[in-house]
Each structure stands twice: as C-alpha cells, then as structure tokens.
View 1 (cartoon, rainbow, N blue to C red):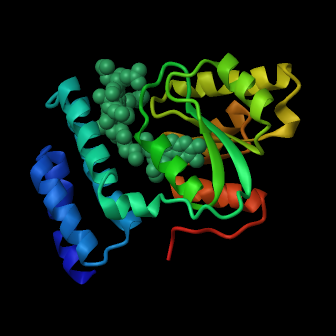
View 2 (view 1 turned 135 degrees about the horizontal axis):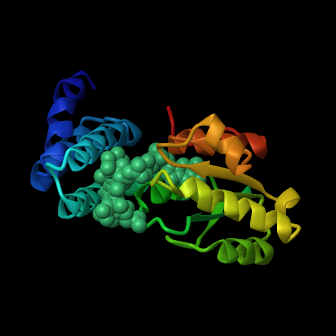
Length: 222
Ligand code: B12
C-alpha cells in the first residue's frame, strides 16, 4: 500500500496524459500489490478530473474525452476489478432500476454504481443512457423496484432528473419508490430541487444509502 501511495501520482499523471499502456501497467501492478479496487478507482477518477479540466481549458478536445472514457473502461475490465463487481448470487435483497437521464451519454459512473449494487445483492435493471422520463416511469411500473437510480454527469441534467421525479408523481408511483440521484456536480440543494430522496457524488456512498433504506450492511469496502 505504501508503494502504491508513492506511485499513485504516476497513475493520476498517466490518466491525465491519456497513456493507456502505462495506466494499465500501473493499475495491474497496484492490484497485484493488494491495493483495494476502490482505492485504485479513486486514483483513476482523479486523473479523469484532470482530463476534464484540460478539456475546459481547451488544451484537450472531445477525442481526448473519448480516449479517457476508453481508458477508464479498460481499467474497469481488469480481472480484479470485475471481481469487485461480481454478485455473490445469494438471495437478492432488493431491486433497482438505473439509468443515465435524458441528454446525457456518460455511463462510467452509472456502471460503477451498478457493479457495486450487484455486489451487494441487488437486482439491477439497467435502462442505459439518454433515457427519457417515460421509460423510467414505464420500468418502475413494470418492475416495481424499491429504488430508482438516476445518473447524470452534465450539470444541466438536474432538470431532466426533476422531470423524472415529477413524471413518477404524475403516474402515482412516487410514494412506492426511493429515488437516488448520482453525479459529481450534485449537492444537497440540487437533490432538494429535484425532489429525490438522496444524492451521491460517490458510488459507494450511494450504495450505503440504498442499504440503509433496506436496513442492510455494505459489501465492497474494508
Ligand atoms: C469520459 C468523459 C466523456 C465521455 C464519456 C464516456 C462514457 N462512456 O461515459 C464522452 C466522450 C462521451 C463525453 C462526452 C461529453 N462530455 Co464528458 N467527460 C468525461 C470525463 C473526462 C470523465 C467522466 C467520467 O466518467 N468520470 C468518472 C466517473 C467514475 O465519475 P462520475 O461519472 O462522476 O461517477 C461517480 C459519481 O458521480 C457516482 N455516480 C455516477 N452516477 C451515479 C448514479 C447513482 C444513482 C449514484 C448513487 C452514484 C452515481 O459514482 C461514480 C463513482 O463514484 C468528464 C470529466 C470529469 N470531471 O468528470 C467530462 C465531462 C463530464 N464532460 C463534459 C462535457 C462538456 C461533455 C460534452 C458536452 C462534450 C461535447 N462538447 O460534446 C459531451 C456530452 C455528451 C452527452 N450528451 O452526454 C463536462 C461536463 C461539464 C458540465 N458542467 O456539465 C466534463 C465535466 C468535462 C469538463 N470539465 O468540461 N465525456
């Protein structure tokens, strides 16, 4: 672990420089050293934030965001990482309908949340990205989940999230489902505005809210 702390900055830099070979090499090495997959994800995420900043500064372009997304997905595909997301196939404790809201194509955060929820024995119905409110309502009516998870990375998606919650209320389904919204930009104030029951900037925090709602303890953290 101490070795990893020294090399963490190297990994963050490799993500920032979009050096996929180096990212994978460092990630594999970290996992071999016994670094927790969630700690590794945090480091990759730090690199992604730096990529985002370079995009904002106009040093990077859309192709660079695409590359960053591909690199993150490669890390998520490493064997040790997929193990983190493996369901124990015990009795399912609850059901979640999950998707990225209309107007947003980002799915990496959604997929991490899905993986952690599955590892905690939730059945997840993933409805994909850029999902219209009508689809969320239809899937909630069809599957009757305890929880609806809405992902949105673009700041303006608070409006789409609010519309989903309103559409649920109009369909008479709001009281039957807890709504959790996730994305790096969300705050307690935006959560209130949306009318959700909870928000999370971090997938594991989101899992904890869901387990609390079902009165269960969390898997996937040490
Ligand atoms: C990779 C990336 C892309 C990829 C996405 C690939 C993919 N398959 O997802 C591509 C190239 C498609 C892309 C496109 C665009 N992007 Co982009 N992208 C990024 C980047 C670099 C990383 C995003 C990411 O995956 N982060 C890592 C994940 C793990 O973090 P996360 O999503 O926040 O998820 C965590 C939590 O939020 C939470 N979580 C997420 N969802 C959920 C759901 C629930 C229920 C819960 C509980 C928790 C939860 O858990 C996760 C893990 O802890 C960010 C930079 C940044 N700062 O994030 C920009 C960024 C998000 N993109 C941005 C922009 C502007 C765009 C474009 C508009 C660019 C353009 N001109 O076309 C398009 C939009 C396309 C669209 N309609 O969606 C801006 C958004 C700015 C804003 N204020 O809204 C950012 C912030 C870059 C920047 N700094 O300018 N992008």
